[in-house]
Image (tube, rainbow, N blue to C red; front, side, top):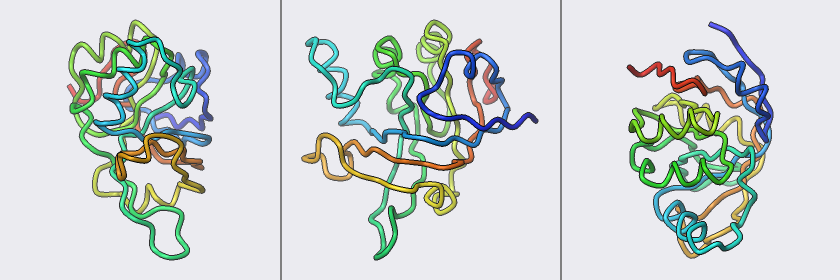
Length: 175
């Protein structure tokens, strides 16, 4: 298994070097977004509106956060099931998104969009939410605060442990 240290925003040459099954330690800014936030982002794209953050080269984490304990940046930070976001993902990839972090299978439409846009699907290990939270250095709401737990968070992460589930050529570790 190869191990890569990557920084966001993701550069095309870094993505092209990744292979399904590789381990990644990801650092930089990632954005959390779940179902309701994805719906709003895609509606904004279809209306031609500016998004609350620039998608180019960015990574979205399908984060299932819990409240932070006193003195902590974030509570547990585990991934939610990615298939729930499949209907929105191709539009986000076509708009510049380069990576998603989640768990579980993706639809063929998403895999086709990953290949078309030379992107990558990172897989976080379910059940390791406390370990994932230890990689989060800061967290702040940047959009859709009315969605409460589904608001978009900007997360600064350092060496977040991930695996490449689907690489830019469509190779899929989950098949």
